[in-house]
Every structure is written in structure tokens, then in C-alpha cells.
Length: 299
Image 1 (tube, one colour):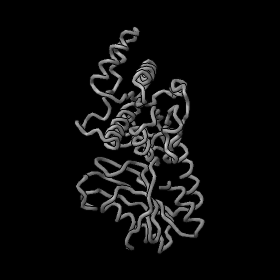
Image 2: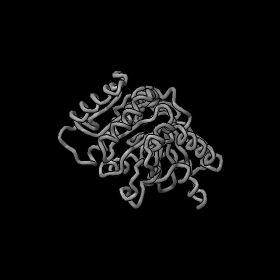
Image 3: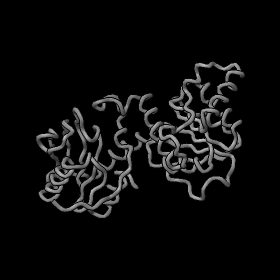
Image 4: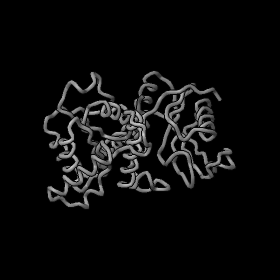
């Protein structure tokens, strides 16, 4: 998987022309948000502005531009009347010939998006931790994977994941930015309790999750109170994690459910993804995703 800027850089180095399609406005119910983008070449595309008839319309217009040399075009599309889609919203797409200036702008947006990613600290490199690291790798997060046991980490760390080998897991926790998330699933219940307590005491976490059961949570709450901690902080603890699918404890399933919990928690904290028309987004937020090249029929 590669970013739009990496894809465009490759295409330009090969002399392959491309059109950048960007969602300039999105009103009502729309398949993608303002800033979402895709690159259209003569035979391949990268990225997406929402799929369906909307995207096919954009691809057809972009390939007409590649044929006639047009520099820019705007498509004003009410989704129902113009494309037959049932979203019911209204999208304005901006199409521009992609050159060196476009590449520089994409690189800057992606740099800002990387800096704006929320931070997640994942404690534990056991079988559930490995499943979570793999599941979280493509998500728009800065993932710090922490354990003191070098042999537990896989030979190949998933792309975008930062491994921290330390016997002092409270140190990276203390240095985490405000609004970070914490996932606690070490090999030791005692260590889980210490890490979860430290995360809750910070008072600025987007998410604190600890693997376990209702029984483990009850034990932790008693332990937490016995240490004289503020019991209101316990409202910020998710334990068990990924509990929406009762009875399925496969690591990959837990990881998928926890990923959903995390994304909702980060969105609630920032109010970025919950804005109905994209207001409040950081300039690069819409460019956080990664993209696969895909073949499309010529228009």
C-alpha cells in the first residue's frame, strides 16, 4: 500500500500523465468527506472519492482531460439526480492535471496528516498483541508497541508500527501526548494493573482498554480503590475490550472489535470524523489513508 504522493511520484518519474480528483464540497449524505482524493491515469487509478457511479463519472471526466489536455474541471453532482445513487447528498469534485506542484502539495498534506495522527500505546506482544498490531497497522494511528521480551515480537514488525523494547513500560506512558490511547494486554495481571492505573491517573486519555473479563475488572477496581485512587477515573476504563461479540475470543476478532472501539473513541475526543460536513478537520486529515492501484476499464 502506498500514499497518493508516492504513487504520483512514481507515475511522474515514468512520464505517465495523471489527473488528481478531490472532493471539494460534500453536503448531506455523501460517500466520502471533503479532501478525499484519487489519481486517475490512462489505465489505472489510485485512491477513491467514494466508489459507485460517482467515481465512474469522475474517472470518465478525468480521462477526457487526459485526452484533450484540459488543465482543470469542476463536477457539481447531486448524487440522486446526477448519478442515481441513494446517498441523497451533493458533491463537488475538483479535477486538475497533476504535476510537480500537485506532488508537493500532496506531500505537505500527508506530512501534516502524519503529525496529526492520534497516538496509541499497545502494551504486550503476545498472541493478541500481535493480532492487534497487524490489524492496527493500516489505520490512521501512530502505534507504539511496547514489551520487554524481545523474543515475543515477530521477526517483521508491521509497517508503520514502532517497536519499543523496554522493561520500564511506564516510561513511554509518561511521555505520551495528551489524547493518546492505551491498550493493556501484557503477560502479567499485576503489570496490567500498574499500566492501566497510570493511564487512568493521567486523566487525558482518549481510551484506556485492558484485556480480561468482568472478574478481572472487578479485581482491578478493588485494587484501584485500595490504593486510594479517584474512583471516578474508573469510568474511563474499557474492560473487557472488544466485548460486543460475546463468546468469540479469537485474537483476530478481538483486534477487529477493539479497532472499532478505538476509532470511535478518538473521533469523539477530536470531533473530527463526527463533523457532518468536515468542519474542524486538520488540513491534512483527509489524506490519512493509504491506497492500492487498481485496474479500471477505459471510458
